[in-house]
Image (cartoon, rainbow, N blue to C red; front, side):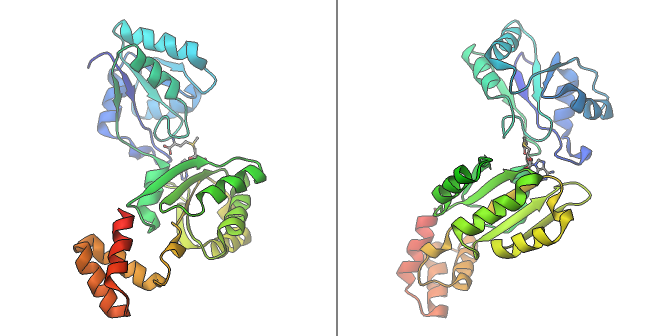
Length: 276
Ligand code: SAM
């Protein structure tokens, strides 16, 4: 294995979700830079990984990143892991990756667990285009301003949220985007109490509010794109159009839906083209 920074995803709950390659790389490198060394110990012990571990977190700063990058220049192989999921995705590592690149050394990304992608794959929301936003601001005003800016997005929006703010977030989505906007909430993915539910934000909010268990754990909240833009096309027609377009050429899909619902084929075709 060459001298490089290896960016290694780790499980987001279920310890079995390590890839074989991730285990092999963590066993083979000279050192593991971990967000929280104590937290990672359980995982490393489980996979009998005895590689030395040092701490690298969001407050480690540029000089710590430079020091690690210099070790790679000298020939070391270093792996970066975070507490859960893919490093750099709402996690530390950005400065380190840049420092390593700046010194002309390779950064080798390994594929693996990520809460955002895991949630999206079970949401039943459009996936042809999605925007990962991560955590919204903690303060309500700033959070609402950000939601307002996302309101007319053509993409599915993916948010992370902490349990003590989940109800506030759902309240704000309802307030800013309207009670009927479809959302999907994915809680405790890969763990015992894994829950994925999609409905209007009003229904999801009431359900979470009415059940204290639904306010516990880790959350991904996904917001459906703004369908109001497809004026004059019912949700049913729109859903059929997009489903058919996954299997058929766009003109054919548009023609079938137009015939069925008495719509203009040209308008529906345009909707599909705009989606690309
Ligand atoms: N790097 C991680 C990744 O690849 O997903 C994300 C780290 S971020 C600090 C932690 C947030 O990710 C949590 O607050 C939650 O929003 C989301 N998350 C992590 N694990 C999760 C899980 N098992 N189920 C749902 N959301 C999760």
